[in-house]
Image (cartoon, rainbow, N blue to C red; front, top):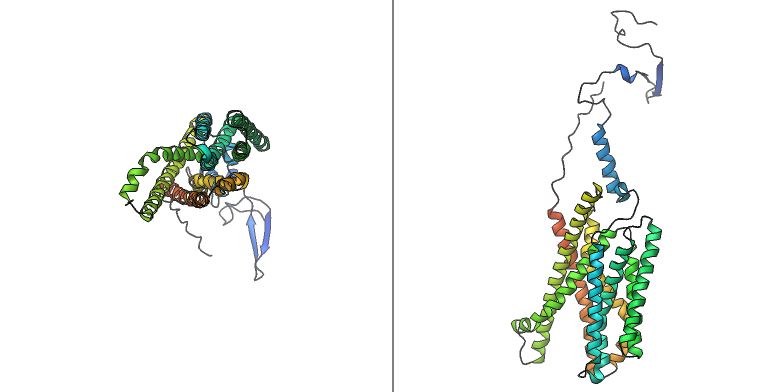
Length: 377
C-alpha cells in the first residue's frame, strides 16, 4: 500500500519489507531497509551500533598487542636490535680479555702444577663471554635480514664462525694439551649457542640480555677490588668459620648488586630501543611485561646456562681439577655451588628490578564510558 501524505508512514521509503527471524513466542520481527545516504547523522556522531573509525583502529591495535603479535607494526619481520654493532665490539674485546687473562694465569711461573686448577677456575668467565659474543656478533650480522628462517640460519652460522675463530686462537696461543682442547671446544660450543639465541624474533630482548650481562660482568671485575674491605666489614677474623661466613655475605652482596644493575640495564636498553625504533620507522611495537621479565632475568639465565655448558663440555677439566687433592675437590664443589647460587640470585633480582621499574612507568588504565542500554519496548 502506498504511503499517504500526513499518515504515520509518510516518512518511510517505499522499500520491500524484510521478514526477520521469529522470536520464541512466535512473533515476527519486521525491519525496513533504508539507504544509508538517506540518513542524516549530526556532525561528530556515528550511527547507532557503529564505532568511530579512530576507536575501531585502536581496538584493532589493542587486539593485536593483546595476542603478542609484534608483526602488527613490523609486518611480520623480525625485530631490529639497535646498537648491536657496539655490543658486538664490546663483547669481542671482553672475550679477548678473558682469553688473554686465562692464558697468562696458566702460563705464569707461579702456577706450576696448579695450571689445571686455574683453568677450571677461569673457564666460567670464558664461557659466559663466548655466549655473549656469539649472540652480539650474530645480532650485528643478521640485523638487516627480514626473513625469520634465513635470519636464524645466518645467526647460527655466525656463532659457528665466532666459535671456530676463538677455538683456533686458543689452540695457537695456549699449550697443546688436553686442557687446552677442552677450553677450545667448550668455548666454540658456547659461541654457537649464543648465535642461536640471536636468531630469535625478539631481537630487542636478546640485545637487552647481552647488554645487561656485559654490565654485570664488568661490575664483577670492578667489585673484586672491594672484596677484602667487605670481608673485614662482615667480620672476617682469625678463625676459618668467620672467614667463610664473611665470604658468603660478600658473595651475596655481589650477586644482589649485579642483579640490580643487570635489571636496570635491560630496562634502559628496551626503552632506548623503542625510542630509536619510533624515530627510525615512525612507529614501534610496544613490548608487554613478559618481554621485560625475560630481559631482566636473562643475565641470570645465561649464568645458569654457562654452568650447564661447563658441566657437560668441561666435565673432564673439572674432574681433573678435583682429582688433584682432597682440598681441590672441596674447592671445586664449593665453586660450583657458589656459581649456581649466584646465577639464581642474579636471575630473580634482575627480573624483579626490571618489572618494578617497568610497572612504575605504566599509567592508570583508561576508564571506558558505559553506554546506556536501549529500553525494552
